[in-house]
Length: 537
Image (cartoon, rainbow, N blue to C red; front, side, top):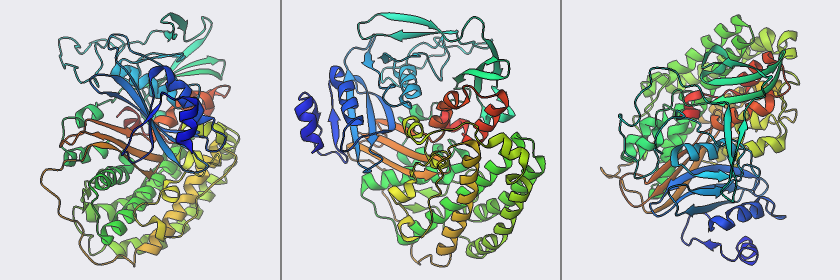
């Protein structure tokens, strides 16, 4: 057994009893050895770092890793912490899982933990001159300490590498001869307010330095002072093109923690809404990618058809982009009388339009030349970077949460998980077009089978989660969206972390763009389809 293997190799690691998932607590000196043991285990290698969360527990500052073995599907938590608060240091795991690179920078930014051996220990979201670490429990909000600057903040072209022996090394981000251009923060091809500092050699990309935080709102910090029903509204503002799906994830996490069973009618309605949300998102992806690559006619076609989905959503939820529809224990209102009829009409309407999409863009020789063989991501790298969703499946990684960990009524419908092995921009594009067809197929199976019953169960006016650690995820439009909650039995979470779908997508851009032409960077970013508010949170 895994516990016995760990006990034999690293006897100081203890197992936390009563946790929903196996939880291994390691001393800082054994943390990296435990992480490597789990990743390299011969029988059950935990090759996928699902979520990395920094936590201030008062007596320690530390991290919690949620790891998964993509072969068996088994998941475990790994926890460590250090008592030092002035200059806390933990060993990095960024060389074990690539996705830890930006995640550890986020932990450093918010909690001040330095990761020894990390290649680029800089702030990620906050200004370089920011004073203090906002996710610490003793952090004081003071405008006098952190005034709003009148001039823009230019990040230094140097970074610091911390070693385990306490020494430091300063390194230059770019070579002296590099020609560095800014793409963003306001640029139509970056899908939001995001900035890439890009080193070029002619038209060839040598390096991309990702700058986040332009629309950071401190949602996870805000959640620590909000009751659970209040936090629901914040999920809609993350990936606004997957608002219903993200809210669904938080509801599922809370309902599982409360052991609250929702009516069958609710499960059907939520599943249908998730697929309508996926349709509207993928149609917008198609429209904006085509526009990024110069096909303006296609942009109008896609928006024309997306409006029909939004009309259906609006009639029941009252919202088009943002939908305050999922609530703890159900949905806020029953479906509109026109709901099933309009879905059936749309199921008949869209397939001929998809053929039109192929004639207009998919088969276009210019579009294919811009995307085929561009930004190739291997399956191994997709897993290491945590690139889930359509982008991961284009690389051959079967990572669909609806299949691997079914929720709603996904275990009662027939649909294919679209997989390709090429891993290039064209197949990331193709996966989403094929998923539109699968979403229509799911809706076709559910629309006439919504059972009667209540659309919500009554909950207590004040919701308190039991003490413990909880995680639940759904298949968002861009990949796995997860909610991690640490509760101490109060009406507010002690720590809440959103496992963003887009954060891993932007983290892989420097890897994919290196050696490509600058025009390829636009195709790579467009087919990854990241949403910046979901990155910044």
